[in-house]
Image 1 (spheres, helix red, strand yellow):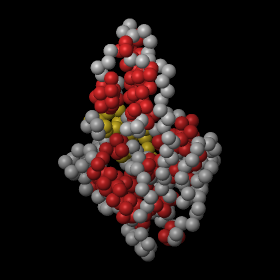
Image 2 (cartoon, one colour):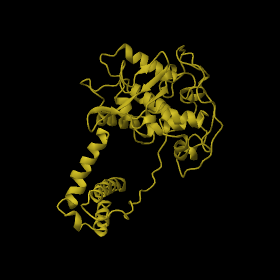
Image 3 (cartoon, helix red, strand yellow):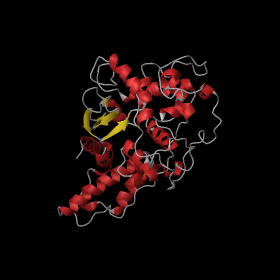
Image 4 (cartoon, one colour):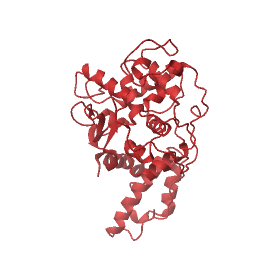
Length: 342
């Protein structure tokens, strides 16, 4: 069992199951008791949390049946509580641009890496220059091998076997990490004040302060991962490529999760997704004020005219609210981007 799973089970036992029925004899526990427990829990915690407790209780009582302690499992016919569908909130390319331009210099690297790689928070926390989750500048990929768990405070395996993957570094991420490496004083790419992993609470405060300063829609940090998926769709990438970059267990799961976006988002095939946000190159864009004049900058990639500074009138790109799941697929642009010149 993964250490993080064991820690979660211990927490569910200590704070939910044992306080509710820890003194009861197993033989006296009835389906009605279990149903009452679930009904009471959903009044105080999220349905998903209540369901986690129910699943653990089912496993415990199933073991009790196997060991001959009780004749039947009283939880067997109990259904999980209904979990309301929550549509992930996504940012448009204009909002991504405004957010990154508004970010402080010390926070922009991790924000930019998150939105253009789709790495989970634990995967970002685990990034190190020479070991786990390292940016490999020779292959232009981030080699994801593990994840940091803040509850157990240690490195552990990635979320799943497919989460062990290589993620392409778009030019803006590559340039940002190369610059960050030059000034690095420790082994970690993104570290806290004492050199350890970046604390989620500290990151969250900086993230939401930047959102407020940029004047963009308030989303969760994890929604940057969903925004990354939407950028891949807008760039015309093949579902199998999106699956591999996200670390999903199958392309079918990717389609179930994001299929409804594939016939709604405006598609403009590009080699690198940061071209959608910074057409004239991120290095040039980050030297501008939000609506400042374009300066003469040679860094970056895909240098284009400064039309990106004009208001975005593309209704499709500004309407990314999700609803339902459809299986529609846009034409892919191949399973891999073309070789980069960066």
